[in-house]
Length: 337
Image (cartoon, rainbow, N blue to C red; front, top):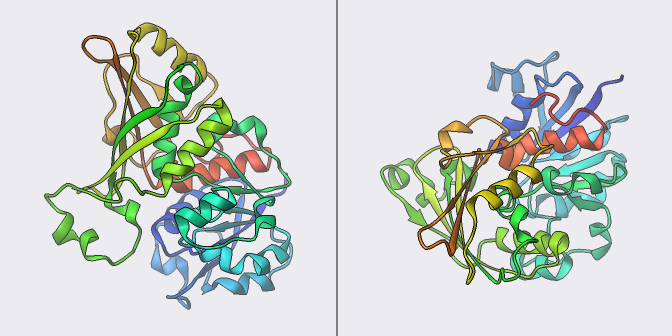
C-alpha cells in the first residue's frame, strides 16, 4: 500500500511538534512538507534532532504548500482563525485536511457567537467533527475533519456513555484542569513559568469555547440539551487534563450499572480505559493517546462523579488527529500510536 503524502502547516507550535514526532514513527506517513508563519528557513531535523525522518525538511512558509503536487493530506496546526483565513487557497490542493483548531467545530451561528468571526456557511459542508470513540461510524472519507478540542475530548468521553440514559441532564458541572501547554505558545504573562509555578488559577469560567462544542455533540448524538457549567483551571504541569464531571439526580445512582454502561460503550475502543476501581491520575496517560475514566457514586447515591484524564497534546490534539487520519485512510485505528 502506498504511503500517505503529508504536509503540516503551523508545525512550530506545541501541537505541530507533537504531531511531527508521532508521524515520524508512523509506518504509512511520508512527510513531504512542514510550514510555519515564522521561524521558517532552518531544517526541522536540526531544530528537533530526535525526529525519525527519512529526509531533511526545511521549514517553509505555510502557503508554499500550494506549490506541491500529489499531496494526500494536510494537517493544519494553525491557531484559531488561521485556516479559515487561507482555506480558499488551501483547498485548491485537493488534499484532505485535518484541522486541529476550532475553526470548523461549531455550526455557523455558534461560531460567530463564540469566536467572533464570520464564516462562509458553505465551508462547513467540507468538514466533519469526528471524535472516534463516539462517532467513528459516521466518518465520510471524502470530507475533511475538524479535530475535537482537548477539554471537549476529556469531557465528552467522560459524559457520553451516560448522556443518553439520564432523563434529566440539564445541569452538568465540570471542574477541569489542564497543563500549561494547553494554552499554546501565546506569550501571555499568566502562562509564564514565574506566574504558573506553584500556583493554580481559573480562567474563561462560563465562556470557554469548548463548552458549545461539547453541548453541540451531546445534542447531535443523544438528542439531549444540557447546560454545561465548566470551570477550567491551569495546572503548574506541562501536559495533561483532568476533568471531574458532577451529575446530580433525584433518584439514586447504581455504581455497578453505570460501570457496566461505560464498559459496554467503550468495549471496542483501544484508547479508552475504564477503571473498574478507583479514580485516574494524569501521570498514567501522559505522552499517550489513552483516556482513563473512573466512576464514583458519592455518599447518599444521588451525585455521580465521572473523572476523565487525557494528555492534552496527544489524545487532546495530535494523537487524536493521527487516529482520525487512520480512519480517514481506512487504516488500523491504532496504527502508529
